Amino acid sequence: MQLPPLALYIHLPWCERKCPYCDFNSHAALDFPESAYVDALLRDLRGDLPLVRERTVQSLFIGGGTPSLFSPAAIARLLREVGVLLPLSPHLETTMEANPGSAEADRLFAFRQAGVNRLSLGVQSFDDDCLRALGRVHDSEQAHAAVALARGAGFASVNIDLMHGLPRQSTGSALRDLRCAIDHAPAHLSWYQLTIEPNTAFHKRPPLLPVEDVLDEIQTAGAQLLERGGYRQYEISAWCRSGFECRHNLNYWRFGDYLGIGAGAHGKISSGDGSVQRYAKKRQPEHYLAAQSGQFCAGRRTLHRQDLIAEFMLNALRLNEGFSPTQFSTRTGLPFASLEPQLTGMCERGLLQRSAKFIRATDLGRRFLDDVIAGFFPD
Image (cartoon, rainbow, N blue to C red; front, side):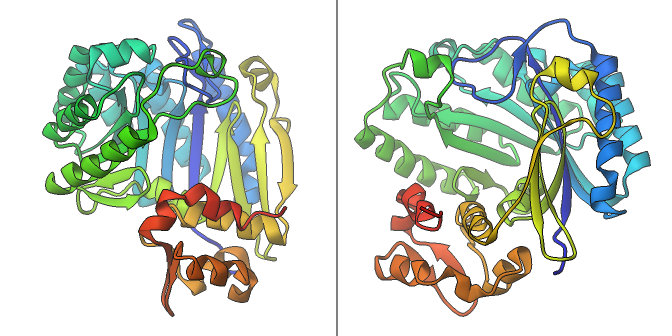
C-alpha cells in the first residue's frame, strides 16, 4: 500500500472563554502552564515518532482553543523543536488559529518570524449583535483590525472563519457580514453554517435560528457573492483565491495521514501492510500534562473494511472535485468495487455523479450530503 502524505496537528486547549456553540476540547483559562505544556507536546511527539519512521511532514496546523494566547516565544520553541524531531517539507504550510481579541501587531509579527506562514482568524461575524449572541470575546472593530494587522505582519495567506445561520440572522444581515469579509480580500474564507452540537450551552438553551428557507437563501446568495468576489469553492465550507487552498485540510479530506499531539488531539496513520489506525490523546489538560512519553494515548483502534469505506467517503465527498477510483484504492487498500451497490444506487437517485475519472456529489447530493454519507456507514 502506498503511504499517503503526512501532516501534523497540534492542539493548544486554552481560551479566554468557552463559546456557547463550541464543542471542541477547549478550556477557559487566562493563566495556564505554557512552558510545561510545550514540554508535554514534545514528549508526546517523541512517543509517536515510531509511527511515521522518518516520513516528511507536508503541513502543520496549530489549533485550539486559542493558540494565539500562547507567547510567540513558546510557539517559536515548539516549531523549532518539531523541526528537530521530524523531517519537514521545504514548502511546509504552517497554520495557526488566532482570536481577533488577542491579535496585536507585535505578537502577529513575532508569530510570523517564528515560522507561522498561514493565519486563521476566528472572526465568526463582523456584526456586534451577532458576536454578542455567539458569546465571542471580541467586537467588530477588533475583527476588522485583526485582518489588517495580519496583513501588516507579513501574512500573505490569511483565512477568515465566518459563520452564517446565526441567532435571529436575516438573509440581508448574513450577506452584509459576508461582504465585510470579502472586502478584506483574504486568501481564504471558511464560510459555514452554525450547527447546534451536543454538550454545548446552545444545546441546553437553544437560540432562535433562521428557518430552512432563509438558510437556503443565505447559501445561494452567499455563494454567488463569493464567486463574484473572485473566490472558488473547493469544499462544502471552504472558498479561496487561486492557489490558496488549505493544504492541511485537503490532506484530511483526501484521507491522508496525520499525527495529532496535544490534549484531545486525534491522529490517523497508515502502515505499509495496508492497515489504518486512529487514535486519540488524553482529553483533560491536567491528565495530559502529567503523562510521560508513551502514556498520552487515551484510545486506539484499527479501521476495518467498512470503517475505511465510510470514513473515506465522509471526507472525500465534501470536496467539489470528489475522488478518483485510484485514489480510493491507494488510500484504503480496497478495490473500487467495494463501493457497490451503494454507489450505483446513489447515482441512480441523482445524488452522486461518476465517470471513469471521478466520483463526486451532485448539487442535489451536496444539499443532502449527510444522508449520502450515511449510506456508506455500516448499519
